[in-house]
Length: 264
Image (tube, rainbow, N blue to C red; front, side, top):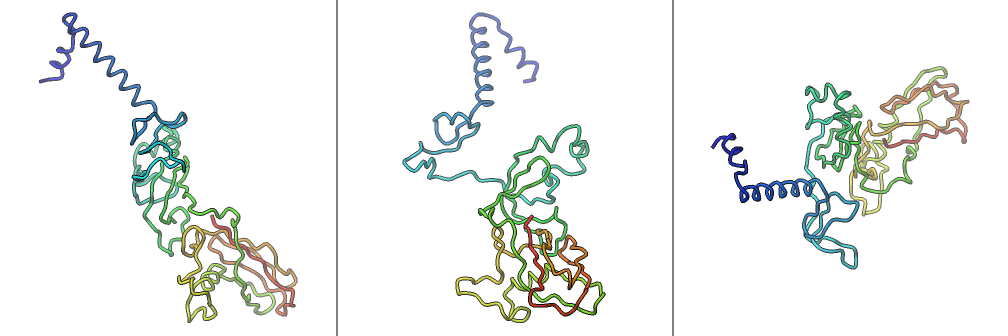
């Protein structure tokens, strides 16, 4: 049967056919309005007023629990770049090339997935660094949902170390991240002083959210104080390498440098 034949059969040819046609049209109209309204899945109860989609298997009990059967299972994906919608939208697609006109970035704000890709420690490009967890597209980039409340620890002190002071006037550099990695890693060769209580069984002191060491590209580095009579700090690069000039190689008991790391 062709499309034209189907169309012709729907043309009313009498009162009975007209009533059938009107009823069908009403059902289609009602169905379309329902599907574009609020939806409740798991129960026949209407969703709460501000909810477009509500998942529940029971009415709220005394502890406000609405499901003992399961929850929302997010799609597991392998994200590729924090500033793109890959792998869903390729950067070669016309939609992405013309993103300023079609607003594809803005239209996907709120897109939420579970990323299973963990970038290697050797990755230094910030937009390529990923850990496992829930990510949401904010209209410009992917943001990871924090798994623990560490808002009170938005930064931490770099562990103490002895800064080499060679000949006066020398321009030197020191890898702050490498020192942090060495001291926060249990290794009998590189860090024989590492001692802990029995409950700390891991090989590293973990970052709060990730359970592993922060990667080099996941941190910002800031020198907030140093003895200006001993050294002159000339800069810190994005990889955590501090450049400095030696002014005096005989520091006193109060000569120190204060360095903080800020997770991105």
